[in-house]
Each structure stands twice: as structure tokens, then as C-alpha cells.
Length: 144
Image (tube, rainbow, N blue to C red; front, side):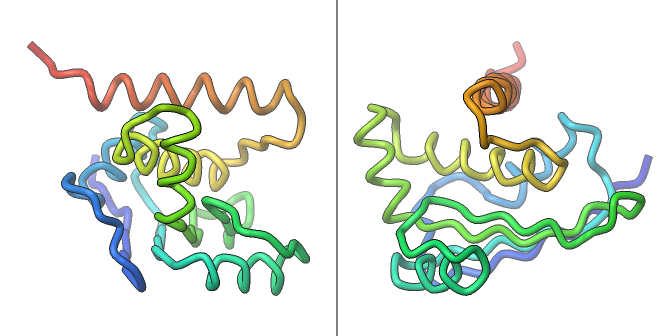
């Protein structure tokens, strides 16, 4: 099967990670059977994420990720992810995770949102957390 997933990376601020982001996204997408469509990821500072949050979601606060699903349900995936590395650093400290793991979880989280996963209720959050961790484990565990 041919992989026709287009990934566009924009670093308005540095993601500050040592892993290859595009390769990681492709691996995560493959775990969900996602091989066609388009995902644009933009790493932004706190001011920009607040600006996007206000403009599109009417929320006046910093967040770690904002996902926009731009596709109709019968189309290949098409979406935009805005990630704030500064906020991811705060999360990493709060949850006692390595920063790079936090960024990986955010990338997976965004992909799951584009696939229709939600996290508005405790039950939805639990499902999403379980799936994020499952995918991260599959990608980050070396194949011996």
C-alpha cells in the first residue's frame, strides 16, 4: 500500500527535540491505519497559541495543542495541529515525563483528534490516554 500522507512542519519556534518529527508522525499514523491525507503541524509560542485559541475556540488561555479537523467524514484526513513547546515543557515537569515524550504524546493526541477521538469527558479522556500510551509504546519499543 502506498503512503500518500502529506506532512507539513512549520517551526515558528523550535520544537527542541532530537527525534525526526515527520518519521514519528508517519509511524503513529500507520498504527491507526492512516496512510492518506494531509497533516500540518505548527510549533508556536504561548502568545500565538492563545491567539489561535481565542480566534477559533473562544478560549483565552495557553494550551499545549489545538487540533483542527478540516476534512469531511468521507474524505481522507486533513488537519492542522498547533503545538506549544513551552507549554509541553510545563506538562513534562508536572507529569514527570521527559520533554520529548511529552511532545510525542501531543503529536499522537493531535492525530487521534483528527481521527475523531474526543476528550471532553473523563471516559473519553481515559480512552484517549490509553490509546496515546499504546501507540507511543509500540513506536518507542525497539524491535529485537
